[in-house]
Length: 149
Image (cartoon, rainbow, N blue to C red; front, side):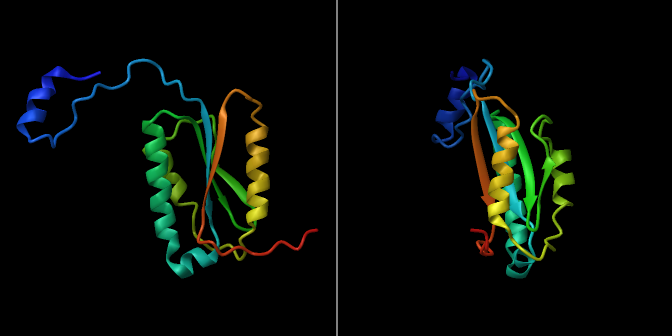
């Protein structure tokens, strides 16, 4: 739907100001469960990827909140995986600021396999088969090999 009051300004601006679309009035039909997992290991701090990871986390979380995608959770992983923001709470700028303080990037190892297993468990424990489930892993790519068979 187009906001007709803004069409004249859009044409007068040389088609640059394109804020002519009205917001969605119907409830969102998206029903996703999204888990954002960020590597909290020392290698993130040493390589300088920690600040970029937090910026990516903030951008993705804000974008998904604006798109009303459904439930959003944030986790940190390294030696162990911790859920910092659970699925059932709405993501706000205040909760985002609190999450950032939980990333000192001081864990000695990056156990990615544990992160994937914990993410699968966290998503399956919710028990809603009707929703799509996504996991985004934000890391510097330095992964410790798992010696399990």
